[in-house]
Length: 240
Length: 221
Image (cartoon, rainbow over all chains, first blue to last red; front, side, top):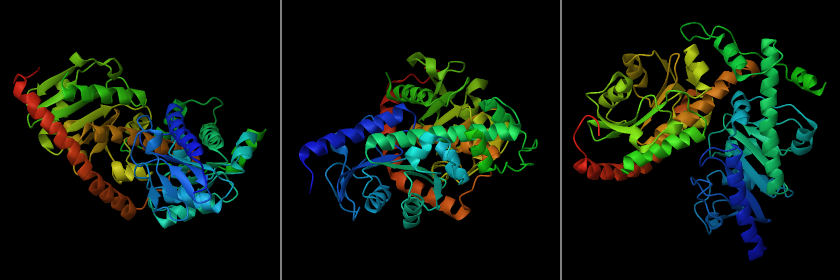
């Protein structure tokens, strides 16, 4: 092990605090989502499975081997998504902190499997370009892990198809900034798309609801297809 | 305070904190075969107090509690119900649409789809057959479970799935998880969590047995 006890204690607290902060900012629900911080080249601390972020203690975080995530010690049973965190840390030595979660607006993009164009200079800086969508795979599968790693190439965030979002940073503060800008950018994108689809100039959730309801007949059958939004046009509008 | 009342108050607070409540939300838990504890009609979950959770005989209820009572009568496997009005569920219920498996947590926790029932008990019972949740036309959603935690989690998942489904109308169609994978996830989830839920249920039933011996056997306690 190439880390000292003081560093480990500090990083345990970092994970604990990040979980609470994610909850406070509504970027995670209940016990869902998970985070990791690197201890050294081959070890990371991750959140345990199925525990809520408030009652979780720094001592609960297990140490997981990055090269073989089935090996873990200390703390409680690690999250089943640890393979993805490990794969990103192994592929990207500059990455020291990762967050996987299912924030509400990121989940919308993930469910439509639509890449998010660069919505602001801040997003460009933090994410490194448009946010791609990883190939769909069942939870815990190699396909999901490899799809996520591929979509993260040259980026600090990606969507996991029909699942959520994955973010990575040089430290937890940066990873946190990235998930925050992702959720904000997804919201902005959906607002832009709603205005384009409806021809209105002011967004409200009710505007989107009315547009949605108009696509169905009285028996609940869809009579109009969803809009195929031209991503470039949305981005152009935003950049003007 | 009785444990079952404490549980209902705790989950009412959680639903409010998650922002998935509306005007006429109501939650309940089964107590033995013949009774249920339910939140008083007309009391907002945000304002709920101990005295607003009442015990009713499921065979003798006022119309406000009829849906809950009938579901408990029809489905002995159901031990808790949330009847909620989350903001993003409302347009789907208004459209009378079926939410497909847009997210894998929906496939696991709610099932491969969630249909909209007409706002009458026969349609609701029929739509809930083999399922734990449904939407109600021009209304909100009804979720159920072996525990209140299960019913509560279904509300959160349905709210998120509804967001995805509604927003898909402006960003492009949802890419739906294929039927086989959705059913597989549901099967694994049910198998994995059945033991855990069974444990929770046993603890709850043990608590109820103790309470029922001391509780008065009246329509309302």
